[in-house]
Amino acid sequence: MDEARTFITQFPLKHFVKGQTLIYQDIEIDSLYAVRSGFVKIHDSSPTGDEQLVWIAKKYDFVPLEWVFSSDVVSRYYYSAFTDVEAYVVDKKRVSCLHQRAP
Image (cartoon, rainbow, N blue to C red):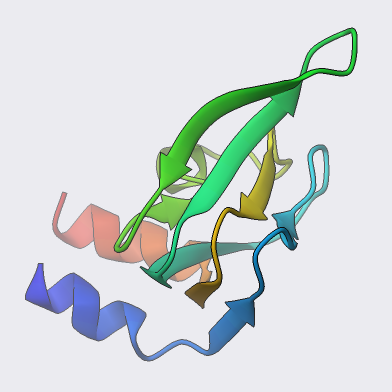
C-alpha cells in the first residue's frame, strides 16, 4: 500500500467543488482519479431520466475503478463530487504497469 501511495502522489492534484462533474458518461479520457479526500458519487440515468446511484468512492479509491482492470476508454457512468473532493489525476497506462508489477 505504501508503494501505491508513493506512486499516486507524484501526479497532479485537482480540486472539485461539491456537485462538480469529474467525468461525464460516454466520454473518452485517458486518466483516472485517485481520491485524496472527499467522496465521489458514481451514477447513471434511467430511461425515464431518474438518477441511479451506483456507488460512492472514498479516500484511496480509483475512479473509474473498472478502468484499472479493463481496456475500456469510454466512461460508463457519471462521476460527480458528492462533497468537495481532492483527487490525483493519474495516467491509466502507468497504473496498469504498477498493477502488473504487484497484483
